[in-house]
Length: 309
Length: 309
Image 1 (cartoon, each protein chain N blue to C red):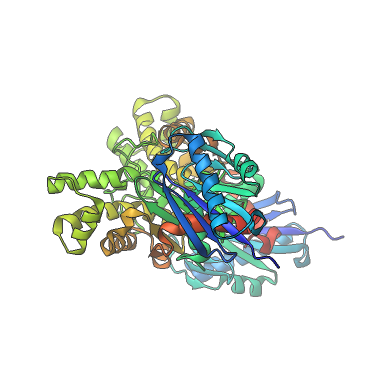
Image 2: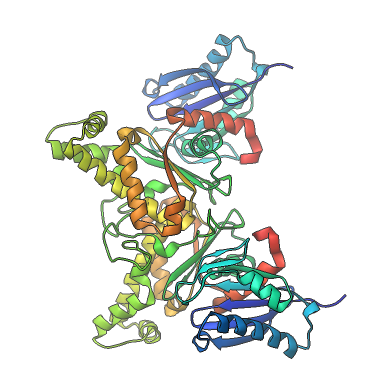
């Protein structure tokens, strides 16, 4: 029998990544392009098509060897119709029938989903949430994205818009969020917010990497900033844990690289604030699949197909 | 064929209620006893047994006409083993194998669940959440209880402890809650808290009923108290709606009798604070089944049996 492969594409606000997978969803080859190089929607679509064709050819494969292409995008989508509603951080995408467009240009089945949901799917099937039937996976970056597996299935909600852990209010009053809400978690722990806070404390510009490095060296100011951020994350997670009685929480994204101080504080906050049964049950992990989680989720989407839509 | 019936029992901190149902889960006969009349656990168990036997006899039925008994209790339970872990508001119940005890004394199958989950089940199957696949049902009383239907199924979480909407923190800092948490929703909108607030504003003791009546007459002080309470509820619900992208929220319990001011304020708060897709989707309803929701849910539990465990 002919050997089959899967293509996974992760369209991010910073990078477009294309990978070739075997049927076990292991990565065979991976390319990355800077998204800002593509000036408009048509450029970006062409880049996906070229990236897919290029990786097939360079691997000595043909179209018939490819089971399908899975695409993760940073915004709300209609998974059944294959439509991107819009992309908050990539201008020019409104109601794009991307599934139809890519299927026509590539001549293979295309599946589409939101990137945070694909990350969650990947951590559940092959990563840190494996074996846990009720899990929240979240990514801490410029925004705070999330996905839920409940009862062993990816949970989408009524409009495929579930998982917005970044937009849980953690105070009655507070800063106005980009989403229009007030005092959303994201407006306390988005990376711009953390860097802004750090600049105030250190009286100079300081990168997230440096702030993490300082915390690892036990710098008191850096530790305080991370403790504040993680404490706020812990407040939101305490509510989620009480509501959903989760088995596992998996945390990824750039901000999670801050290390132990973040995870320890989150765990302590949940232990202190959540109800005893729920707090005792839930385990808080760092992502196992890291930056590849979205790509791997895209491959799983193709492999499992309709079962998970 | 012999006609079959179901027994439903709702064990509350205030009342013990026993009802006879037809197989369509319609109530045929209903009794109510004051729970405080029973001084201890054994008294209360005997009251359930007597109540069940009495309603069977008075209806001219025999044991063989009864499909089973469903029991809802105000606390955490193990539905599979049929054990009550404890009842926060009824002393003396710890790890009680109530299913086994009642089956032996009554000679019929007994099913058990938490009352908030049964209310949610009832509203989903026969009440206001019918036809909505993703719904939260909550009861506002001394405590704030809740149940979730997600993807068309009762969602239990890892330890059957999901649904604790009353213990979502709505502020970083705030009052210590009975559950051990900080600034939980329940410590802002539990009925004791609302009455305490009202006594402060009106400079006298005032009942919840009077406070509702005053609000309906547009009394400004009463309206302000309800608006505050409903606003706090709306904050917690905005987070839940963003996270779960729900179709429906059904609100019951004594506090919900305050009427339009509560519902209008909750709807406005969600519209103002939740994300646009999620806010547009969710509908907020008043309970359709009211005080009978828990009883009806207990009957449904018997009828649907293992399918919903």
